[in-house]
Length: 199
Image (cartoon, rainbow, N blue to C red; front, top):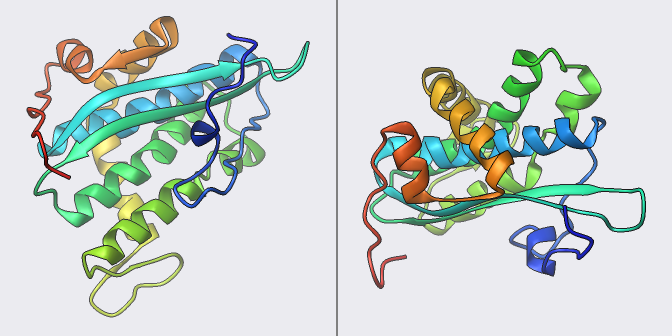
């Protein structure tokens, strides 16, 4: 853990709003939980086969003596990605985080609620809207899907890929940062090649 706060962009969502940093767990439990969250994003992205993972990391720091904060980041590049696969990988972080709480006997309603990751949901809504796809927060828009439906897609993927997610999460909590190629080596998944100039 560092005493230096991360860059401001690591602490805000894509709109500039602060991301929640509180998790009612010990430091080690919260750090591992965030590693599961980021591993969920990275492994599900890679499994879909059209998202290149650049890095995935857990970020922990001491904002003041005796206090700690933790967040994470997964940097990726998409190319010809299904919009619903993109949305599902956004939801996979929250799903893997909650699954971690259940698997490690840490689940409580309060802790599960703290995994909500509204910033991931809002990113998915905004990115899909740019391409004409409708993702509803709490309803199924005409011709689209609800966030609950997308979370269901993510839940199936996370369940299927749980051994890989667990392996990546434990490696990430030890090393802090993993490259996409390191994740591929740990899981046997393929990290699609980086496409220069692709969005």
